[in-house]
Amino acid sequence: MRVSMDIELKDVPGQMLLALQPLSECRANLITVLHHHQKLTPRKTVPVQLVLETRPENIPDIKARLEENGIKVVRVGEHRFRESINVVLIGHVVHTGIQDTIDEIDKTGFAEVADLTLSMPGIDMISSALIKINALGKEEIQKSLNILKEVSAKKDLLMVLPIDVQA
Image (cartoon, rainbow, N blue to C red; front, side, top):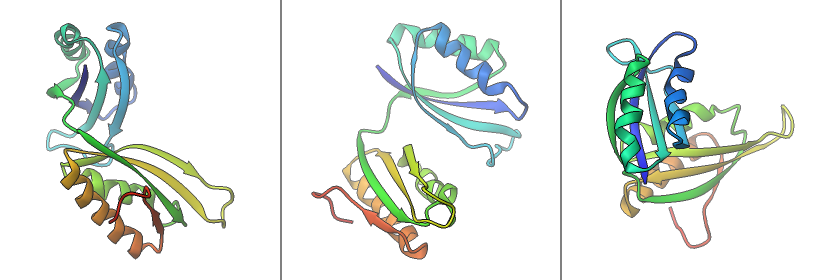
């Protein structure tokens, strides 16, 4: 079963390791980690979103072990994202700021960048990024693509979609 989990880490070295150890101990397969280090919560903790695959009966044990390690578990649920799409961005992807491009999708609440593969052949050369976006549904995928299209236009990036998709 695929499960999403929102946790909060103290802003000190070693916390991510404390969060990942229980997953390993319970034989959960980690799919995605979104670590929002620059966006502290009001409690001055670092929000982290995890997506993992595990047996349903392991979830209470994982949660208990996280809490034993001092990790706050904010939300646990079945994976809420049902649709995904891969998009390629071509241009000066790194120099124009890939993080804020990712943040524009992630902050929507209905979609997130689940994977990123970056190719940067040289400092002054054009780079490219393969971005996988997960979203609640097809409508939210379209909204995400519209956001990415706007960001790409502002940054003078070429956005390449799968052949059967239009933004």
